Length: 251
Image (cartoon, rainbow, N blue to C red; front, side, top):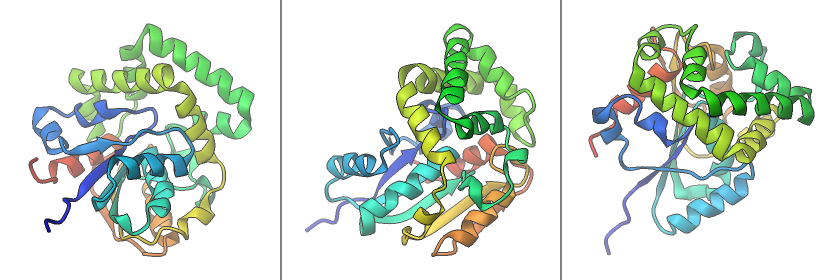
């Protein structure tokens, strides 16, 4: 009897979408051609159920980028030993593991979510209007203070267009799922880390100002499997994702 092949389930960033796998050009996109993008929504048991229905027998690799790493870690326990390993790229760890907010470019969003439902709803409504009217300008503004090798991406129209697509996806087409998951992220989910028993690997850029290196170190220390952190000198948030995808075998 032939063994089912390993399937890769990808958890994109927030705001994010499948477009972030294509924004680095066709060669890198080809290396991610076998990635299946997880449907999200804040209820991690339901996300796991959807994955189990889609892949009823295959072993799984979960790949989480940025806030997608938090989702992957919270989905994994529901899938149990179906998950052979978890790859985390520029991972967002629980905010309560350390004093990270001051070094995170997305801090205003998280602070609004921590302030309560209505402040966060007001911010998200404003963001949605900007994403509707000027998504490319919004994407360029997000990258205006890029660090490390993210500066090259900030000057790449193809990457900016992919980021604009992700903004529209999260803030317009899937705003309820986006807001639910951001609220779930800012709540204290440190206890969930103890339920992650699968092998974990972490890729982190030394110049990341979205999820700082100290966050990756704290996450590695908090996970039961004590994953190795691969620190990539000079890389920031999105350039670490690019490096990770470049290292994947051709599909």
